[in-house]
Length: 445
Image (cartoon, rainbow, N blue to C red; front, side, top):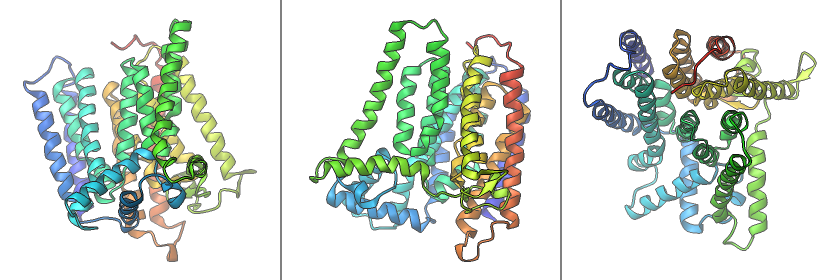
């Protein structure tokens, strides 16, 4: 009933929002104190999110976080990855460490409501910061009123509430980094975008999926834009500085326990394992492979004479080629990066292997940002559809997945997978039409 209420509220808001939006898309239609009201919306949303997050937690991940807190406060960072193996990148572990310090100072009991809220709070705060960034984008491209409306739509997005609040996952943190990266590239602040991209990887390994967006930015603003040796080497220097920053963040995990070489080898291996672990066609991602009944099915079986893994590799290559091709086909646009990023993550989710249910989540704020900078009814429908499909996918995995009685061809799995495919196709139709068919665009101011 709770999720039914969320979905109902979500639909009422977005439908009323769309009709209001169609009458208020003129940039001259601003309201007084718009930022104040937007901050008020965000603050109220934060209270609602914290209130809805207090009374449920998923014991597996939450138990791991609590265990890491104890270990980090006792033994420090050195050797952490050697002991626990594959987990999260450094910035996420730093958050867990500081949460442990707060728990120790204020004597917060394990698995108490206070500790649960403390662990969930970074993702909840990042949800609200994403809302404020969407308002900023909406204010620039549309109007204050529309920016506030779209901000409200994301504040009450049920998939975001579920992911960060109910489940207590951290996808919102690296998702914010990706949205910031796209915003910076669209504002022609590519050098700053390098560090946002690095931060996304330092919060979650899967941030590397968005590398083609950075590549598009480099092509548009460096290679294809009056490139000089000075510009090239300045960007190269800043890019290497971002990589160096990533390396520096790993140093506390390497030195300190007399086994620096072993710790470094473990960290290097963890990045490889993060991209190759769970070698199945789908890992609870209700996508194309799950639609065929291949959830938790080995990726080495064949589909039309190629293994599922090989088909996933082909999908990745095509994604990169299409993303890069967008730079050439639509080279004057400075706002295409949101749609390119949405295309990358949604297509990876649909057709690559080893995908988890939450990997689609970054597409939700990204597609809303794409809708803000270039409004389209298809994008709006895709946003609503992918939101609900991701919500149902995650809710089904969290509450109904039972390894002892698992049926990969169960109706919920196949139907949600099919629904996700339909809304992905709607988005792709708009993506191709905007970036490859309607390419006579003037440069965005």
